[in-house]
Length: 418
Image (cartoon, rainbow, N blue to C red; front, side, top):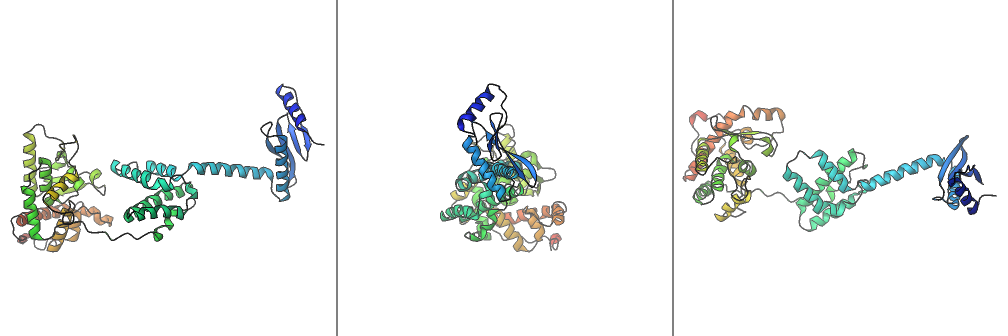
């Protein structure tokens, strides 16, 4: 005959008083040891083994007996109860970890580890997209449980708002996070890899608006020269056509980057799109404009570090919007011209002339060459060729400003770029 609840309580009280309590059997291998520990003795594969079933009173007599019956069923099925308990415990720990490793948790871990060296603007933009557009439908799901259907459902809501391009950007962001999750062992496969084929295709990209007719380019240059605006905006817009760099590269220019002796402006890697230092040869017209700007600045006090400081935000450069407002004030619509359009004008006209090698033009535009050996050559020997190209380009713009056609190529340059 087995134990009853009254006997178990009595044995437990005796143990609490410090009395020696021996092992008492309930039958079938179940024992109460020391008045509180439930232990099951059994044999498996010819060996005597013991299974812990809990501690009284947290585990009652009835609960201990259920544990004994479960162990008997496992033994009848050829399963070792002790080993099964270890597996169950490991799976419980795994489930708990998976609950913690939600997409939100893993995404933040990934970006803090891998992208900490990115620009602050990139980090803020990425974090905003995660918080506002990805976490609402994916953030609380464990990465190990994410299915393609979870991702596609959220992205289709973005597409339904008419933001097809944004949906593809978010899909790329999700793929990055889940790829990291797979590499770390948090998930078995990247569910986002299966989604692209089910998404609405991206619309074909529209070319940046740019004026490409030579007469209209000349008129644009004259309009810029005549438009009254702040010193920073005025000179930034005058220099942009000559230099055709990206807007943030020009707006963030600092006097320490300009070498007047060698006539070279060195843009640091941190401000370049491809994170590679870029040297810009400066034609005579640009040097003259920079000297004018410098003299004008010195009339009002010490020379600021920035070439184009904002009049509203101390220590910061003018914004892209400040330049764009001038174009709109001059009644150039967004379909006609944008700030990036100055790069398109230079690229188009320089290539159309047939005077310059494609590699030299690409180097002047600071486009990345996938050929690493050729890319290294671009940054060295191309500098002198680009110096000539930049001066030739400045002369072309001056001719267009004066209403003339492109000037003929000087005799000494014929064949140089063929």
